[in-house]
Image 1: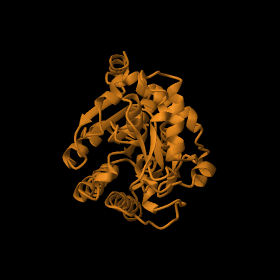
Image 2 (image 1 turned 30 degrees about the horizontal axis):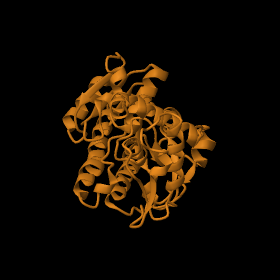
Image 3 (image 1 turned 60 degrees about the horizontal axis):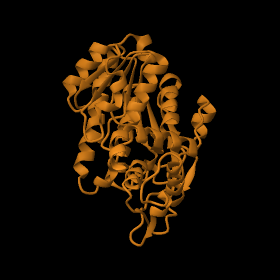
Length: 335
């Protein structure tokens, strides 16, 4: 299966591409505009691999997308690209409209035009996989739940979802939507909770936990997520929606304490009794994230997927990866 990915230099996309190339040994082209969260370094280990092709470009550049599709002749499009820094969406909603809604529309148009040129057998085998978020439901729901987007980010993803569905029902384009829960792991952008807490702890800064720290999140390791995406790309049913969640709920306070305990076993910080001693409950506006615990019954029962990585194991792997990435700076800071 030849793949065409968008946004593959970001967190989920880069982990997927590395897994795909290393496990499947099949060709893949990656189109990425390299915005703040897209880093070429995430894929440095395969940059010279003959199976991997990188194209620097934006999905709103339709001629570029068209040419890349025709030249590389993929069997499947996996659409990771998105404006995902949700905290910015109330301040710059137009960015989310342009990148998530119009970008998805433009990609669908070019994928449809390409799909129409294929033989009947190739059309039947083709897949367009749209990577979305379980946040579109506004809570913990099954795939049949109604949408309740609560901010411009989730509204843009919900709108993109509807366009993907419409292209299946209107034109027959074999689309599949995947709603992913709260993911963590190596290569995640530094704005997110786990890498941000790690950086603060290693700098000896206060680890502020707002309110009582009991806001809950469901955690899914990125390795499990990309395994599900690969499985769905190869065996998913066109027109379907699949949820992927970790089914491992933790409060923010519990998660940060666990991270500190793991970090204690890996590194010592001069002048700090323990990393956990840096945690401080701070009065003020608490993080209002809901626990978007996507229901996994469908992907489990139909495709046999499960989230197999326990949270402590995934955190240990993730922390080790960041420590290795930051090793040069840490050596200077801790000596």
